[in-house]
Length: 418
Image 1 (cartoon, rainbow, N blue to C red):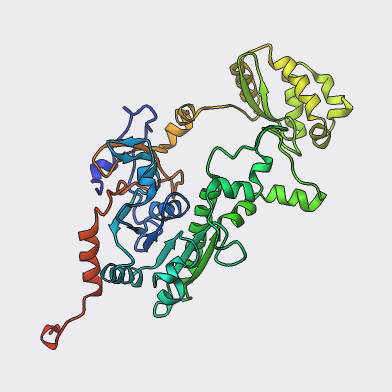
Image 2 (cartoon, rainbow, N blue to C red):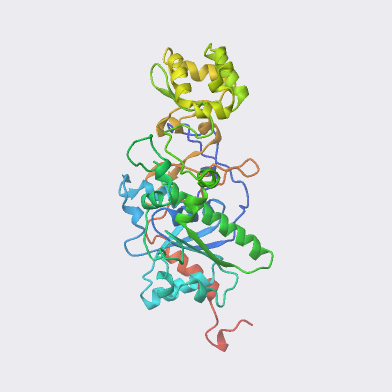
């Protein structure tokens, strides 16, 4: 469902979250001409593929007869999963049974003609299917092969499966998420899945640069456990530096204060006065200049060490007026603060509208919906949504026809070109 030029200029002002700016064609995209074959399900791998597709790569999604399991996740729009749609725009779909010789041959031909392969199966699965990196790269040294898994391609846990919540638990994320003394909770966003997708796409584009400069491709090993620990650099460095495990602090910060959610008259808001200058502005705004000379609050380190008392002191004032009052006065004085938005409120933010991050999307069944498009801009232009997410196996004929054109060899001397 490629968009026409008119579609690219379509405005979505009638959309509740609509951007008031058009989707423009920003010309050749950075990854235009790059072919990616995706053997992935659910989130981490498909997100990696979607990031590459947003940058212009041609992504062919190889699915089983039942399709990516995310296709069945609600909410369903006339039978089409909105969750699936969010991670699979700008892709094509073909169903292949990789245990069937004919379909396996098609898969191998697709890989042989590709620049990149992404797979998020358990380590060893693709090897047993005859589509592992070593075999595929033997005659294709420029191939970039990205394997995404729970724990990595080797090591004592490599054969264990994992989902976002188990990786959040194992990697330590859940130990610092939630209120002090509260039950374990995961981050509300599947951060381990999506961090893996980000690391995967970064690694793929890094190797593309090497290949384009005449170097070889390579096998990328993206372990969800590893990337979840990597993005916790502030927590691991705290442990290395102090010898003590970081603790749950709710919305507070271990080294900065005031830097958390505070209660106002009608609800909560967030304040982040993370340096002495901003702290001075806060004391003026709340009418407590004496706090500037309070021994407990003299420096950022002091305030962080006594943030329970600091919070109690500030909330005594904050509870006298609505959150909107405090947000307004902090904004006027240049103190970072914000409401605690629901997603409907977050998507209705003026900045989201102005940047045009929410865009219309046509599902594979023809139904119209909305999606959060790439938030990036290149030379001031957003990467366009070229195609909606595909119906299962929707692109088989086109993919096979193109594959035949790419790999056609004359079958006899009579067929040789003159």
